[in-house]
Length: 125
Image (cartoon, rainbow, N blue to C red; front, side, top):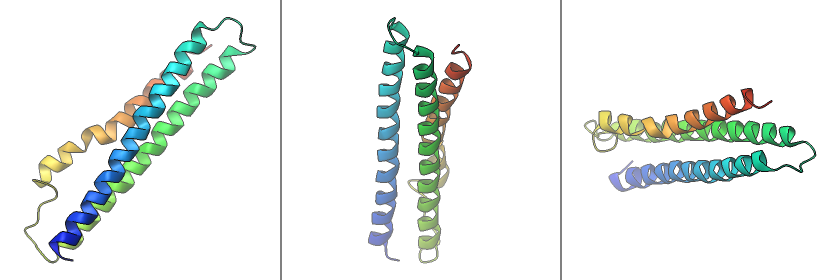
């Protein structure tokens, strides 16, 4: 694998992570807004069912996006390991340890959203 192919594959995987996190933020914004509006609604036939389904949806979406981010990370790491066969000194990203550290928000934001929804779900009565 040459350097251009390596960088293109890395860029592709990075774009996938970016898309997934964009979906995460968009979906969570809509769901939290829906939850907030529903908590204020007085005329709903069964507001608790809607609130529970909203919380379940938020948690499931967050968990699925976390799986997607993990898959993209594994793909990026696999491409890097493959490239290292050609260029043994190649770093993962700018510096390997910094790149690993940079993935912390990518991994934990879906976890935090999911935990928030689980908390809300447990406290919805």
